Structure formats: structure tokens, C-alpha cells
Image (cartoon, rainbow, N blue to C red; front, side, top):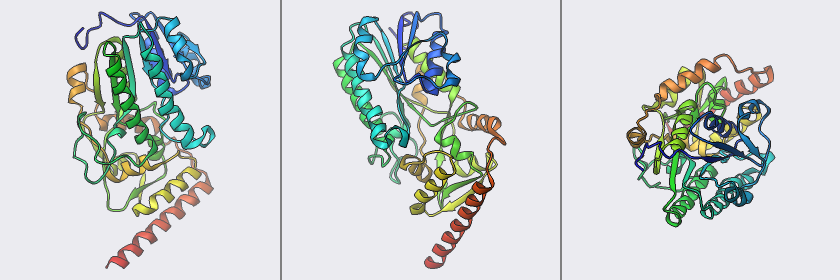
Length: 357
């Protein structure tokens, strides 16, 4: 079967992580495709209440990934879409240890079950451009063949490297299965609610003094389209998925109508802690390094093999801004903390300049 051929659209599809936003939307979209006979959503936890109606046509099974083997065998599953990844540690879910358990151990268990599934012929795995890491020695643009110059400092980036390593092993053991790995740039758009969108929704946005990294995003709807095509068509291989073009961090902050607060790089972790206290998300080393170095990927393989070009990074970001304009409510106490952050950052920068002069 040639890439892009839809003659062998799957019969029974299992989607992991349907309790979360991405998994629920992917499962619902696949269930609406008349070419697909059956869509089964797997998650150990019930979906968020706002996702319940969306999953009305999806068969939902509360199941851990270590129990997936029997399901794949008994239901003659021929396609698995693995989306059950955690991008940032959650203290309520075991912190970093719980995150690694979900991402790395969970993927190992899923691939072990998939290897034993006799009817399986397609595997689609969510990955991330975090696989490339970030450092001052990186190339201007990453292709799918680029190896990371340094192991990522952040937990999510390291998890992604482990996950892709296990997928390569699976490909060797099951060459009969079409395995697709999608390295997504950070999601953005009207529907996205991520660490990154919460970062740009702050009234003041911490940046690294002297740095203006180049960033890429992918619109949430375009990510859904690529995932849908990966299931309905055959696209073996690894693909970067991002909107063409770039935005510098300063451009993105101006477009969002926010105020940038430059801080020294060693102090950015402290800024992240303040942001967490304000309730604006969980920032880890993955995000800090991205805001220092940036990351840009080549998407020509995706455009060529899928016959699809996502909307540009700038257009995706503007869609997010239109949907979230004026949507952040900051209390008086939060604003006072933010103002104190600005003052401390200014004093820190001035002190450093005086020391270096």
C-alpha cells in the first residue's frame, strides 16, 4: 500500500488517553469517519465532564495500559493511536515519578501488548519536537534525521527520547505494522489550554534577558487533521508537525498584548515558581530551555507525504489570541505579586549591568 492510500482504512481503532483533551477530540473525529468501523477509547480515569458529550459515539473502557493486551487480542484491533502522554509533572498525580510512569513505562507496556496483537497493522504514536532538545550548539532548523546535541534537561524531553527508542525496537520486531511517529510542535489555537498558552496569557510574561528565541507552534485543528490522516491513510515513518514560519518570543508577546519582563537566566526558575503560585501553569526545564534557545523544525516531509500544509505559526498564534483576548482575570493580590516581580526583575538586571560595566 502506498503512502496516502485509504483503501485499507482500519476496522477497529483503540485510542489511548481519551480522558484528556487531545485524546477525546481525536477519538470523536475518528468515530465520525464512516470508513472506520469502531473506535474504542481507553483511559484509566473517566473523561473530564466537558468531554463526555464529545465521546458519545466512542466506546469507552477504563483500563490501564498494562492491561491492554487482552483487549487488543479479543477485539481484533488493527490500529492503536497512543496519545496518553503527560507533558508536565503534576504533584497530584505523583509529580515527576508519576509522569515517567505514565509516559515511559506506560508506552513500554502498550508496545509489549501491541507486539503480541496478531491483527495489528498500524501504530500511531504522539511524540514531540522536544525530542531534539535545545542547546546553543543546535542547528537553525531540525530535520527528522537530526540527532540531539545534548540530552534534554527536562523530564518530558527525556521521556520522548525513551519513547521513540522503544518504538524503533517495536518496528524491528513487527516490520509488518505501519508505525507512524508524529513530533508535534507545541499546540496552540482557540481550543488549546496548555502550559504554553497559560504562559502567554499572563499579564506579564517572564523572558530571558538578552534572548529572543524563535518559536514554532501547530494549530490544534491541524494536529487533529494529521492524526486523522495517519489513521485513515498509511504514512510510515517519523514526521515533524508544525506550522510553517516562526515567531520570535518578543513578537509573540507583543501580538498577545502582554508585557515582557526580562530576567537573568539563572533566575527564571524563580519566576516559574511565582507563575505557578499565580495559577498560570506548571513550568519546568523543558519550557525554560525553549524560552532560552527556541526550536525550529523542517516540515517538508510532512507536506510532501501527507499532501497537507498546516496553517502558519503566526496564523495559529493569532487564532489563539482572538479566542483568549481579555480572557485572563487577575486578582488584586495576583497583580501586586506580578508588579513586585517586575520591580525585582528590573533591579536584578540593573545590578548585573552595573557589575559588568
